[in-house]
Length: 126
Image (tube, rainbow, N blue to C red; front, side, top):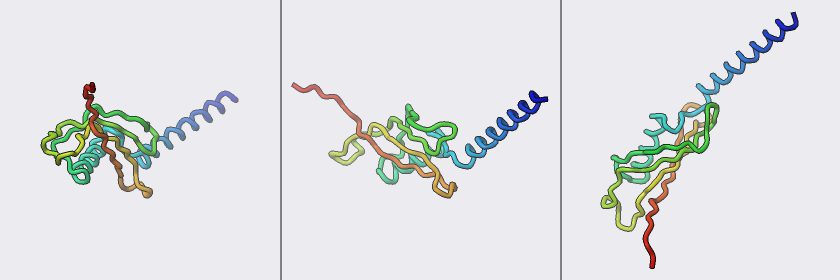
């Protein structure tokens, strides 16, 4: 009888943990780094705020922080499709982008903050 009670209690605990994790995943966790909604927001920020050409692509997307029950995702990606001649003179060539995806406090909207890092080029020095 004791084994039956322990088994039922264990099943109830597992079921409640699964239900809580599912609710958190659908209501609290923002879309991850490679989600099309996140990538669309990053692309819009790159073209609107940073005035990069609309033909840019994000490649080699890496997740630095975040997971199944994360409250935010920290991501990095390489930028491609930028012609240096299209940029104003003296502007560093963007090489990678770092972005953080999270939901607003009310959980209704997704926000993405974006930072650009310049392309590092190696030049031989005498």
